[in-house]
Image (cartoon, rainbow, N blue to C red; front, side):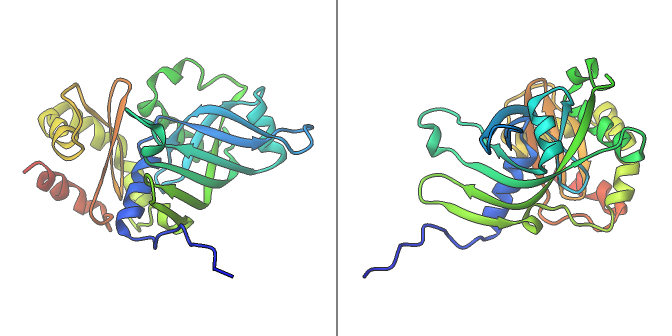
Length: 247
């Protein structure tokens, strides 16, 4: 009796980087939960996605919605990211992340940090972010499945998707000021990050997120992720690294 063929490839650094970019560059995603009272049926909806400073996906949802009621009853969820593009949609990479949802209290510093990062990424959400029935969930990754295209399937761990750096908290504190400085005083460099490193089309590109592993760049409805070769270990590395990227 022949053995069942293994369709999975060994997870390498290229696969890890692709998975991180698919997750961190997503403006929206399909969210799968278990609908309460349905006898275990899955319920899938589309949500806007943000990313916390440690790489954890974040969603802003109303407690009146089905997916919020589902996450309150059962923390398990799956998040699907990856844009189809032209041609066969199955030829384009996509990532499924199995997560454990964590509701974020509105009265703590974590809520404020997530609010600022989410609004820079999704400025139109300012219309409802402070409504009393809206709140954030962090979707803590447990494991992930990457399909990089035909014949390119990988399994990833939570550590593969995390941004682990001793500089994370310090970067979070200085992030807003650094973004304002770069967008105001170094617009040409920011544009080069998007067009030169991310191969994005010309446009009015702005930095909307800085973390130890990379930059989030936005031009209206377009979003790009610039991953650093290695995560920053301290905040002092940020300025010379950004200069290097602009050469």
